[in-house]
Length: 192
Image 1 (cartoon, one colour):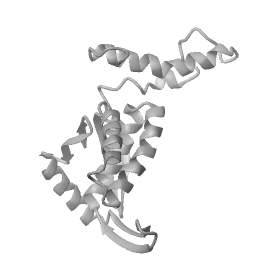
Image 2 (cartoon, helix red, strand yellow):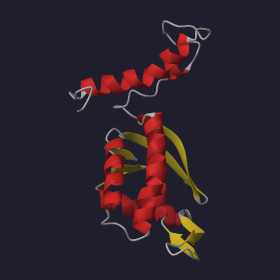
Image 3 (cartoon, helix red, strand yellow):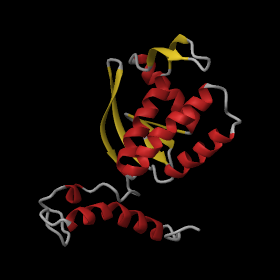
Image 4 (tube, one colour):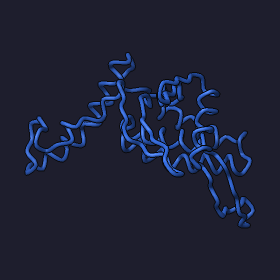
């Protein structure tokens, strides 16, 4: 499953290639239906405070969401992703409670859209007995994940783990990557 700026743009299933958002969604729904995926039975808290039971079938959307969240893991800054996780709950509550045309929904949605600009790449999934399993992911545009940088054995920085300044150097890695991405995209480092 291929994503371009968070939008699913191509699905490859064996020799079959599907493009177009609606066609991808329909194909994911069929794959999910055949494999018994996406059935949700929950007790919800309604806007007025009452509890209700909800049974939902969303085979295609469940798989697309799982792939999207997995791709966020290698394309989004950790701090931004943490904030986005919280904002997603606010956005969902606004939609669920009928507040689509509210200023709070607009504010949260703008922040979420900003966070999704770099969510591009490929996620490999396998459907099996009611579940979709991510078996691989990659992104040609993201510079956030590096196996070498993740290893203390191969990290080529001017610090040692014993240095107190090492912590600061590690913390700056994500900021350096963010700045490099902005420079590459021709964006200013700071916005006023």
